[in-house]
Length: 236
Image (cartoon, rainbow, N blue to C red; front, top):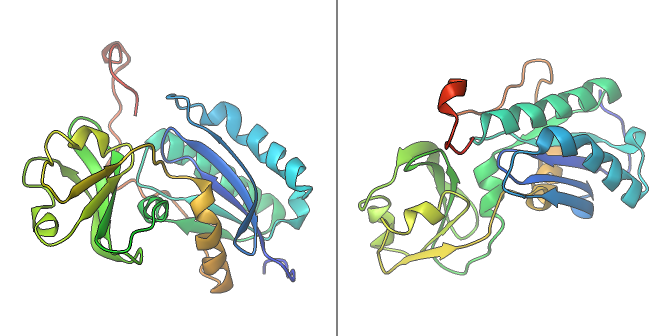
């Protein structure tokens, strides 16, 4: 059983992409947030210092946290492993529940639209992306999948709606997706900021994971690249 508090204080961890993002929220309202997106995967070095920093900033102790929420993927294999390992460790040591959020769903909440559809995309190397489709209310209307982008991608949606593409996978798709209804939103990454309300909603429903058996949502198998082939390749 998790601890009973009048107010729910949740630590949110986002490490699915190059943006290492940590937030602390009370009843869905962000108390403190710290992020680093320097183009590298620095999660192993900065994750735990970031957690200590935001706890200090918010004047909250580890013992006062009611739950930990993790962005479960899809995304970077290494980034997801680091984030999930940290989240599990905190949950085990403090005997608090683990909440998981789909990374693309969280990313879709980084914009608000009055009409149309939202397509968050995460880079999956070459011309492949992880993506899903959401309506204006951030309700998922097409499943999450890995797909290779070409000129016909999302055609059925673009012919009927304005479609807003965002995330680090969207930039490389601009030269292929040229329909007049395609709108590309730059500089949007999965963030612990959007996780705050989503994790609180799950907490209220007691929608939690089995800490011992929870695994990230990789979507496709991780393929190790031989060390000698790493030169000139951007690491995932």
